[in-house]
Length: 503
Image: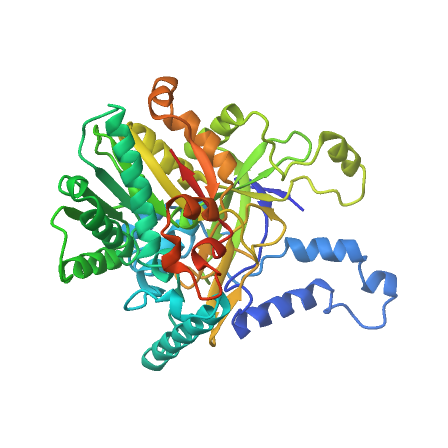
C-alpha cells in the first residue's frame, strides 16, 4: 500500500500515543472512517452507488491522513542533534529519519525518555541469595520491592515514572565481579603473551547508576591489587542526569576510587584517539541505540529509507524515499560484504515475489526492517578511535511483545496506571516510551570483525566470540554466591535472552 508522493514512496502509519491514544485522536479516526463511506450522499440511492467496494474503501481509508493539520504546510528537515540544541519540547512541522526520531525520543536532554522518565531499580545492597528457597522465592521478594518503589513514585509524582532493572543491579556485586574477572584474566594473558605492557584501561559506555563501575573497581582492588594500582576507568555517559548521579555516587562512596573519571558525552560522537590497549564495556547499551527503518521494492529489492513527518497537531506520518543517508548506505554495503550469506528476512524469495505480483492488491513494498545504524556507528567508532581494544558487550538477542510484522523490531512500552503497556508502533509521543531492540549477535559479530579486526589485529588478539549469558557466567562467575537453597542460580538461570560479544 505504497503511493507516490513528493519526496518519495509513502506509507501512512497511525500512532500518536500507541494503544492509549487520547479521546480526541480516537474521535478523529472515527470521523475519518465515517467520511470515507460517503455519509454526505443523499439517502435512498442505489446501494451500488451509495457504497463503494470493500477493497476500494479500505484503500481510501489507508490513504487518508489521521491528522487535522494541513499536510501542505512545509516541514523542516531536522536531525536528533539539531533537536537537542534547538527544542525544549517535541518539535512540530518537521521531518527526520526514523533513527533521528527514535534517538530524539530517547535522548533529547529536555524531553527524552532517559532525561525525564527512566529510573533504574537499584537495591541498597546486594541480595543474600542463600536466604531464598529458590528462584521463585527470590522473584517474589524482588517483585515486592519493585512494587513498593513504583507505588512510592506514584505517590510523590503526578506523572508516573518508569522503573526498569538490569542484571548488574539485580545480581550485584557478583555480576560486576564476573565481568571484572573476565577482564583481569584476559589482561593478564595479554601481558603474559607480551601483546602489550600498558596499564589496564577500561572504557564503559552507558553506565546507568554507576554500579558496574564500582563493582569492577572493588573487585580489582580486593583481588588484583597490582593490576588495580595502575588501572584507569573511564565511564562514557550520554545522559547528563545519569552522569551527575554516577559522579555523586562515586564521590560519596566510603572508599572512592581515585583512578576513575566520568565523561558526559555520546560515544557516537567520540573523536579522541586511544592508542593504548584497552577494554570497552557495554552492558545493555546497544538495545537503546536508535535504528533506521527500511523497506524494499517488491520487484527490484531496492531499499528505501523511512522518514517520519510530525504534523502541527502532533500526529505522525511515515513515508519512504530512495536511500540518501550515508550511514544507511554504509551499513547496507558493509552488511552485504561482511555477511555474504545474510539475506534480509523482509525480502521474500524472487519466485514468491513474482507470483505475489500477479495477485490483486499486491504490495509494492516489503514489510519493514529495523537496521542497527547507531550500533554500526558504535562499531565504526571502536575501529577508528580504539584500534587496540577488546570488547565486552552484552544485550538482548530476542524480546517478547515487539512491534508486529517487522524484522528486528523493537519493544515500545510505557507505564500506565501501574502496568506496562506495549505499543504496536514506534511512532509515539517522544519522551514517554522506552524503545529498545533485540540484537542479531551473529550478524553483529561479522560486522564487528570486518570493521574492527583487520587481519594483522586478529592475528594478535585472536577470535571474536559470541556466547550466552549462561556460558559467560559458568566461565567467570562465583556461582556459590548467587545460589539459592534449592540449588537454582539466578546468575545462570536468569536473562536467558542475553548474549555476549567478546574479543
